[in-house]
Length: 451
Image (cartoon, rainbow, N blue to C red; front, side):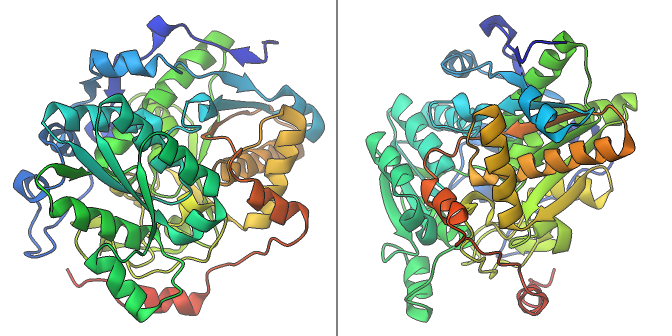
């Protein structure tokens, strides 16, 4: 296999999303109503989600059909290319074959559009006129802003304040698509005002921004809430990535020994890993699946597996997941999309059962890998995506040490064109590592809800 890029045709775009729940030996425990502590039913979620997404959230069907209207919009940028990193392999002098699935070709610049479009579509079909959401680095906010524009919906984005200030061009892109964007915590909601009263200089967090967006949606009949990661239906929609990658690797005559992706809420990792995990669960294929997270927000590698709220204000259902505690306040690292206190219940259960792996890196090592990748392959990764680059490089170096050919696949989930301030900080030597202290972790976990 000498070709660097493996492409598919439009007719090869998957027709169905893959639902990992159908093949999990231990399906995740149900979400709990925060008021009653009992399993949350459809009516508990009906105030902020359309019924079709609620059905997908609870579904155990293996394959769920992608609506034709959604597939037509997917054709704007899908299928995405699978690229063999030949120049990086040469620089590392490794016998490993390194492939990356490049999701940065989407109009919003990342994989997030894969779920934004169906979420906007299902909300429009049920008569919703407006969506609220949160965003960290802005890739999700950009994607849902664009999807809302496609379907004629208003869009309100609560952007974590530290990212709002670090990444103004992401905010401007959302504005260009017609979205309203405010820094979170804000004065627009009770949740935001409560945080500001306690800490006027709060950098914000995804947990806070979620509280604001959920509160906003719950107060208006014409408005629903939209989430860019964590939930089952979001992970479901992202599996189009791994399905395409499997077909592309088949064309190359290869199958991965290891699949990696960055992991914050979990949808990026789920998107590329779950279709290969299906092979492991149903066919006994020997493939490793590795979630890569920041050491400043080490949800899987240092968190507790417990029921916890998805937000600071305790408005969301309780989810069984790996968590750092819903009051966790992450350091202001540049990978803003990975600064969430919890993780997908699906990813969490699979990690708890030992079916997937996780590793955490300091941000200076992540940016070192990102620059090396850019200088060899020509693509500048988003800081979030660069975590997967770091993991892939380390896997390739271990293959070199062992003298073994290994096939490595990772998801390059988005480009870093709006992250220049982060790269400026790294290149100038100003970027600092901010690992999460054991003391802060114990304090945060001490406030987990008793279930």
